[in-house]
Image (cartoon, rainbow, N blue to C red; front, side, top):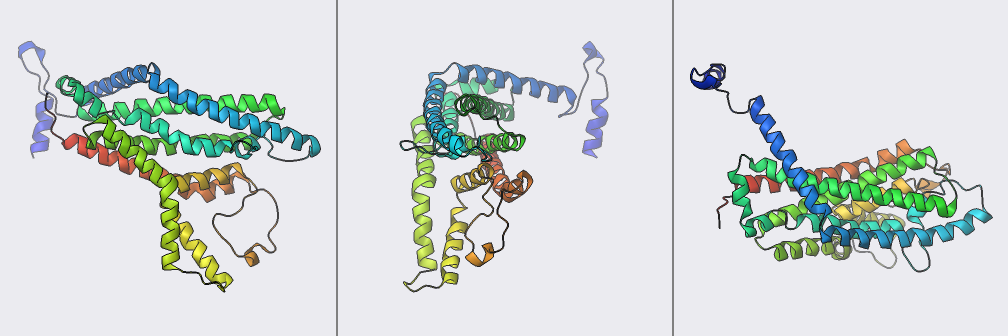
Length: 347
């Protein structure tokens, strides 16, 4: 009844001044919220693209990735000259390592999360420490527009940077090896770019959460970097120790016992977003890879040797993609709820 009465009152025109009473959540309110959201996005984009932090991260990631691709291209040129009938040569730019440098995928998987952390670790607490957060919220700006605008602006900045980097790598590879990409290679690289964006968006959501939980930007940055180091370095060691404790292997272990041991370790490793990213990127950029995880030699007997079609490779890594996307949404949802319920005072 109250909702129906509110709708009726919303249609009544006030006699004085022609004021129209509208219920909460009507179209003008939504339009004002949308304007506030895009105003914040525009302002944050300007801040990101003019900050030294952005240029430093772009140079760090760009120089290392270009060096890795250049080394890979020099290796590929000799291989293509000897075996010109090889397939998917353009994808080798992302997976081939030289004598001095690891492949492009290793660099981007290790350094790209730092971009999300750098753009999000002080998204909220920096405004709060400066005393501008309460001032902004005192204006006709909703809290959800503020946090959504900051996250969306950082995500757009990351997406533009990664897209520019991938185009630069593709153009450099085309010049160096002289082999144009096939249509399937373009599709695989495009979905690899989308996968990288989602992976960096996860670390951006973690950084935004830390900026809400911790008052000092230095503390939130240390928390994000500590979590990044844990999943990149320490979690694989922890998963190996836990696997050895649950399924110990004797010196005379059978093949089935070894398979169970490896399968358990694979399952434990997949709780890490880093593992999900590297497994999915490996499947996208290596068409001849047919399985994920350990298999018995008997299971490979009789299998037809050849590259998987793009659709089947995408089907294999689709759970990884959805898992990373769900983790990103879950972490950002926690940040959203905490920020909406937090009391913000002027300092």
